[in-house]
Length: 92
Image (cartoon, rainbow, N blue to C red; front, side, top):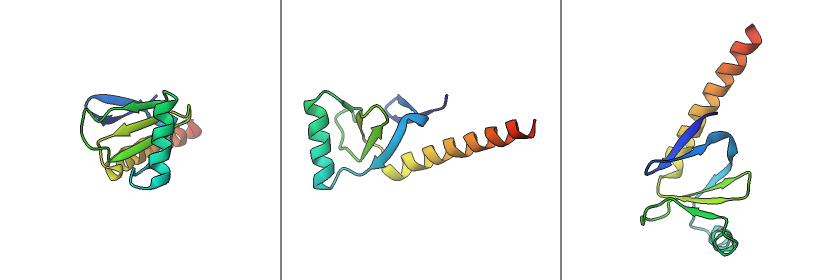
């Protein structure tokens, strides 16, 4: 299981991420508010501005202060490692 750093010492299992979005649009703001109302929102910003919103397969909404581009790079690194492991197991 691979974990990615989502800011301030918080880690998330990379395979649980469904989507990564920016919080500026009205639909995303409604999504965040609905998640807060239903206790599915996890705020890991430590009081800083929310720069990215992570949706997980368990329908939790995680608010992070890390730029979406940075998180995308971390997730892409996970995907590369996973494909390398799959190709190594196929060769055996």
